[in-house]
Length: 375
Image (cartoon, rainbow, N blue to C red; front, side, top):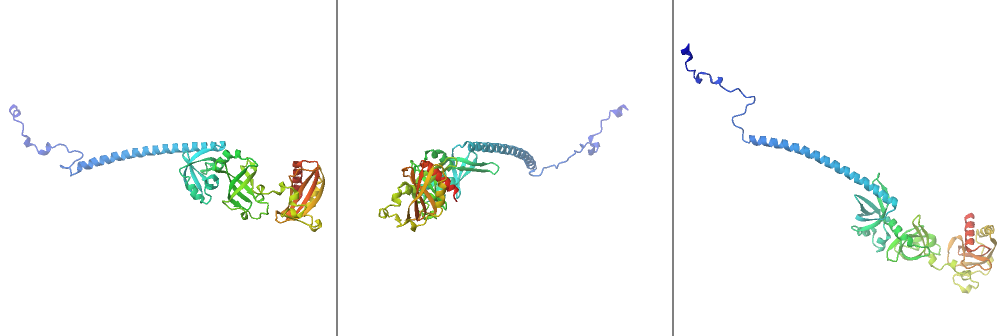
C-alpha cells in the first residue's frame, strides 16, 4: 500500500490532451484578424462618436436657431411698436435709401424696410431737372438719406409707408402766407386744375399747391391743358392755406390784369374810344338783361342794409370770361353808400349799382348768401 502510494504520479502524457484543454470561450475569433480588421473597428467607433456629436450639434443648432428666431421676432415687435409711436407723434425721421424701383424708393428702418411711393417724394428732386424720368431721379437717391414721416404702419399686413412730402410740409408750411408770390414749376395737370411746385428762397421746390381751373386765367378755361403743361414755369400767388388738410390754393389769374381791381369806367368806358377791351352799345335795349340777374337783384333787396339796386351800363367784351353768370364786386371804394357790381356771362357785361349801409365785407357776404339761395 505504502509502496503503491510512493509510485511516482503518472505522466501528464497519460491523460488525454482534451482533458487539459481550456474551456471554450463564449465567442471565438480566428487565429489572425483579417487585414484592416482593427481599422474597421476604429472607424465604426469613430462613426458612432460622430453621429453622437452630430446629434448634439443639431440639437445645439436648433436651440440657437430657436433663440435667434425668438430674438428676431422680439426685435420686429419692438420695431413695429416704435414705428407706430413715431407715426402717432408725427416725428420726422432721417432714413437711408436702400434701393429704388419703378414705383418709389425703399428705406431702412431699424431691422425693417419701408416704402416711399413716387407721389410722396418731395418735388425738390424732380424739379432739379423736370425733363428727367422720375425713375432716373429715384436711382440717384440710393445711398443717400431723406427726411420722412410715417403715414402707414400696418403690422398685420407687414405694410410700412413713409412720406417725404409730409415731412416737408411740417418743415416749410409755416413759411407760406396768403398773398405770397412764388415762382413755380407745373407738375401734374388734370381737368380740375394743375399742381404747381413752389420755389423757396433756398432754391429748392419744397411744397406743392393747386391752381384750380377757375384760377388759371380770366379767359374761359374749358381744358386746363390748353393753358398749362407739365414743366411750365409760372408765377403764382397764394390764395388759401389749409393747415389741417395740408393744402395750398394758388392762383395765376390774380397776378394778371384783374377787372375787379380796376374801375368799371375802364372796363365799360363812357367813351368807347377809351378802351379796346369793350364795345359799348348805342342803346341798352340792344342787349337783353342777363338771364337770372333780375332775380338775384330782387334777392339782394331782401338783405338787411341794402336799400336799392339799379342797372347801369351794358357792353360786349371781346373775350369770353365765363359762360355762366358771374357777379363780381368792385374794389373801388363806395361813393354815397353806393357800390358797383359787375355781372358777366359769355361776352356780355352789365353794370349794377348797389345802395347800402353795409361795408365792403358786408356787401360781399350778402352777395354770397344770395348766390347760395338762387339756383
